[in-house]
Image (cartoon, rainbow, N blue to C red):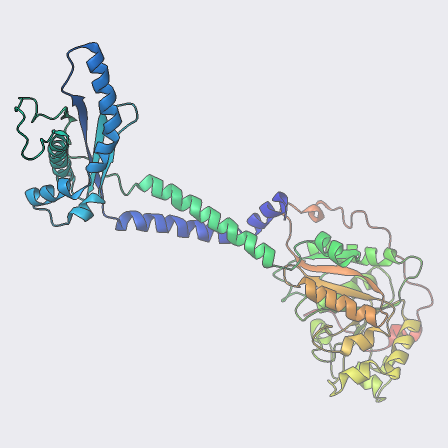
Length: 485
């Protein structure tokens, strides 16, 4: 996934990023409010040598102090320094625990030692820092004081019991005003950054695991099939499944383009019997079938729509037609095609499913079904067959082999790559020509409002008009009803 694709994924899954951002900020605020304030008190000591009668001795003393000051800093947190401090101040802690709250640093090329004490009480932090500095000075001077061997009879000099170094406090600790922890702004920045990174990570993970198609271009590239149409998502489609090609809505424009692309994609060998199917239920194949058939009929093409989904027939309810008499009635010989053919507004002929049979797979793959399709193809210019989904049942494989081509409907962000591949392979296995794909329920790009400008079907080639040989029987057969619910 490149940067452009990742940015599109972020914009598409922005709720995930917002939720993670809110969680990050909430965690930062909670950590800030629940944390106990910690204060730091700092004191500074200067290490000096007691010798210094001339310049050479001063330089030697300076070098001596710098060489040993790093070792002095390690003594600050020892028990011989902290144990008396704990006892003197009456602290409710141990020298080892107190040592974990004290740091001593000796900057390079200096004779300074910085002692920092952290505590939840600012005044107590200052008292501990000053007490540690005093005790530390005493311990270092005692350690540096020369010790005469036991039993030595050498004459005692005045300088024998004096330490060559002295430690002076250059800056006493004062009670701090502001705590060093927690730091609200820093916590908030960390929370925001962490929330954004978490959101971006989740989006990247979901995009990696998500094998559905987000655009018709991605579907076309994966399936190596022509993309004949992209049907935009319309939340009103379940209530108003039928669209009029005389309007200028996005769905109407999309079905115009689908009709035109279908008519001119197979110029050398135009199919007369077309199966419309999908991989799994809920991808919009019936909606595509009925509106494509309506679009063809309203363009003047003699069209018949057949409900070949004998598991869950939906064509008749969509138009408000009688469903009990139809395809299955013809297949078992109880009626002729013209006896059960129904008409809807726009000149479209509809052959409903009829009663649901116990053996739909055998009926749809029978020789009688092939004869029915041939009779319809002799009467109409185009026969659209709405079929069952390919993967759940075997009905469509046998029926599609009797047609001259199939349209594969793929739902945006719903149908997976494995499902599309399995559906295409099942059709190709029985020799069905896949005319192309229809990308249904696609998100509508912002600003895509060309239909409101009155261009109609912009760039659409003129559709062929109805041929003069439409039979009188086909024109007058069935019951005339108005389409739509």
